[in-house]
Amino acid sequence: MTDLETPVAPPCAGPAWRRAAPALLGYAAVRALGLVTLAVWSAARDKSAHQLLSARWDSLWYTRVAELGYGYEVRLPNGDVHSNLAFFPLLPWLERAFAAVTPLSYADAGLLVSALASLAAAWGIFAVADHVYGSRAGICAVLLWAVLPVGIVQSMAYSESLFTALAAWSLYAVLTGRWLTAGLLASLAGLTRPVGAAVVAAVWVAAIASFVRERSVPAQSGAPGWRRALSMLLAPLGAAGYVLWVGRRTGKGPLGYLDVQAGWRNGFDGGYAFARFVADKFTSFPSALAGLALIVGVGLLVWLYVICVRQRQPPPLLVYAGVVTVLALCASSYFGSKPRLLLPAFPLLLPPALALARLRTSRSVWVLGGVAVASAAYGAFWLNGSGPP
Image (cartoon, rainbow, N blue to C red):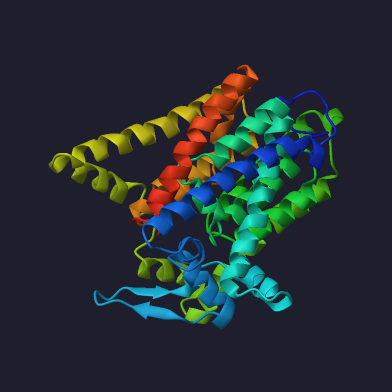
């Protein structure tokens, strides 16, 4: 099963699609509700839902990479340089591949990749939650991920769904002792988003803990050591390869990617810029209410993580969720994008999923159904307004 000391559910048939079917059908229903609501809302405002999903914000940058390759940049009046080198290559590679073998445009290929990846992500989240807490918790975890307020991003030509799919299945591979699969998927996650470092950290921590445990209790040895060692070598190759390539292309060495991100005013400042942003909200009313909501939101994230620790989630999940959350909150990037950056942190949803799983099915359905309607309405309102930059 696994050589990690983790609290697991009773043995089951694994992540077979039939076991995951209720979660996937529920997920598809939630996403369909969100898309229908977006279409109706957008039509009422004389906007194109298709364009909002495939041809605005980051989706435009990804399709430009797919169509034209790297090298495109925009110089703003204030001196900032927005380069498409900031966008990792796996999503545009897949867009180019689908566009080459189908009549789809690059933008529509991005939507297709996102749709397939979101289902794969839902399945991966179910597999992880099912392995740790059982199938009812797995279904609830998937549905909670679907009904997040910014869940509409899962249907956009963005990289969040693709990254979450790779991360979830890499974590599942770690939990079940499939080390080479875990390392390969972690490497692909590193080619998708900078936060791929979270998956690498999870693989490394699990492998090191396994080596330490094997050394102290030889009788508990699991997979051959060379598999774990090779997994540790594979995991960072994707992210490291792209970052080094960007450094060579820009002529600025290994830190060249940081300069590219600086052109977008992105960086890691330990949360200083975010704290100032929140503090500035309290200089007037009613913006102070928004500041209070942000503080409550951050407090909720911390509280969920503490519960994850108390419930003794497997260490790879704790490491992964912790790194994703820290990178999202402590980056100096555009603050409106932080909810979207937290989408891949699905282990934080396991405590409420476990609580819902303990309720009667009828109550869980009413709770999740009500939240799904609210999420669909908010997603339509959000994309027709400021949207996820």
